[in-house]
Image 1 (cartoon, rainbow, N blue to C red):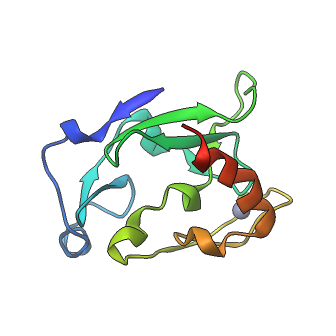
Image 2: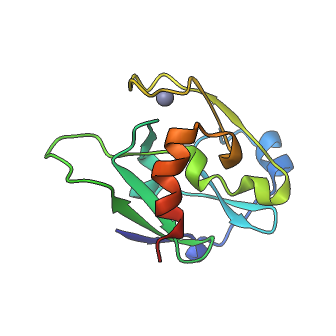
Length: 131
Ligand SMILES: [Zn+2]
C-alpha cells in the first residue's frame, strides 16, 4: 500500500505540536523538523516488536506499507516503530513503553535504530537495504 504525506498542507514543528491540543497520536515526520497530522490508514498501524509489515520510504513523505509475511484475514497489521523513526535525523528521540506481548518484546522502544536488539537489527537491516 502506498501513502503520500506530502499532500497534507498543514505542517508543524515539535514545539507547535506540544502547544497544540490535538494530542500526540498520528503525527508523522516529513523532514526538516516538520510533522503532519496523518489520519490515513497507515497512521493506525500499531507497533509490535515482532511485526508482520514494515514501511519502505520512497521519500520521507511518500511511503509504502509492505507485508513481511503472509497476513491472515483478521490479523492485525503491525510494524516496528523504531525502524521508521526518522525523528533522529533532527536529533529528536522518543521512547515507547511497549506492551505488544510478543516473546521478543523490547519493553522500551526508542527512535534510535542503533539501540534495537541485535536479532531485530539483523532481521530488519535486510529490510533497510532493500530497494
Ligand atoms: Zn514490544
